[in-house]
Image (cartoon, rainbow, N blue to C red; front, side, top):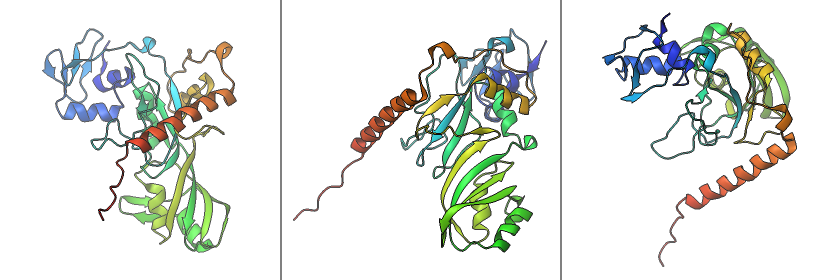
Length: 290
């Protein structure tokens, strides 16, 4: 039985389908010594190399689907490596052997909040596909005058440079004057879409936090820079949303689970230590000579 190359590699933890398709298009993947083609099908005995390195191929039954919830701070990039050495969302994730974490979508550098990672590239690809319409919720602080007419335009739809867009819901969430909080939902993940929708109304987004993905909320008390593994029930909720078979195994052993308070306390200590190290690495401004 053969399967599409990008599907097998995504399932085996070598990236999302999009990432793999880009590598195939760039000629970076070889199958049995020949440059791979988009849509190529392979069997279980195929020899696959990515950038010259042998890629481990896993059968479907050998892959345990894991999903992490990560509380992204502002200032971290959604990339594996930054040429300028800036912090990335991958820096603090748990290390693995024979698999890799694949981000489910992205958050821009100035946005914080919930970011999901999975070991199953096929799950990541389906969750990111526009056809799935998985709802996202954001807390957003707006600087500027917001009136009812503006909210109605944002709910009805406005034209952005890449097509029409709108919010599913908008709820006021506190604040007064020209600094007010709102919770908004939408069912797609276009680049900077929440910011661009508000900016189309000539107001400024001063804070943006993703607080929910589907029915998975950002866990209360999870510190910025901390992660938590999703329970099997939540993993299978996500798989069901995109018509994937349920997972039967989990890395979470309920018999050995720490209390949430103890686990989050450890994360806070590690995060504080890392912040201190980053401060020490920054070059100090030299004092002007007298």
